[in-house]
Image (cartoon, rainbow, N blue to C red; front, top):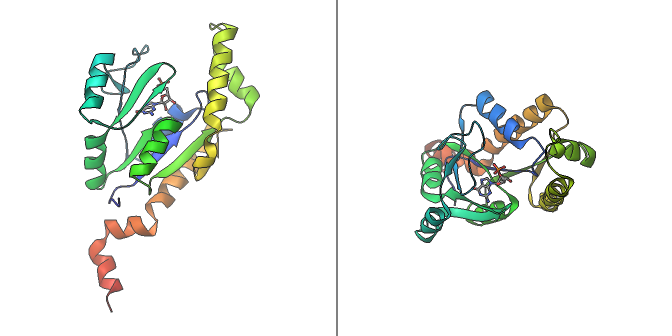
Length: 206
Ligand code: 5GP
């Protein structure tokens, strides 16, 4: 499916700094908008319904899923997450560049529907740094930290499914990398053609 808007998929193990990078990208490039997913997990301190996520009950999620509301959905760390199909399609059709921040399972499903989506995988600088970040403020038990590390390693096994990989050593360089990927994603032939159909048609006439 070709759309005037470009779809970006950003995936990372937790601890790679994905959320901060994406937030900074949206500030740097206001043309990119973020898809707000549905989730059954409880809001964290400071999170607002409709901003970080649409927070819903399991029953409501299942109902939405049965109604075909989701382009993709997955269970991640024991909670359900899903991307709104109609919203995303409407945005892309209207020419709005849109970014989904989802896990590898969701990325696989999105790629099936939108093979032209630009996939970006974000890596931490090293496993040691990842572990330090996952330990955070030291409030979690070793068991919880080991589970998070295991989940992170599982996510990283899928990085080869993404054409772009950013190693997040320093935030400013990683942000420059992400901005460059977004820019080159917009400049692909298929994309330019669907953004400027009349211009391209006039040039491609005999
Ligand atoms: P968190 O609960 O920490 O915000 O996110 C946990 C994981 O769920 C992250 O890997 C995040 O990318 C993923 N996630 C967030 N929204 C979606 C979604 O709509 N679909 C899928 N498949 N994963 C999501």
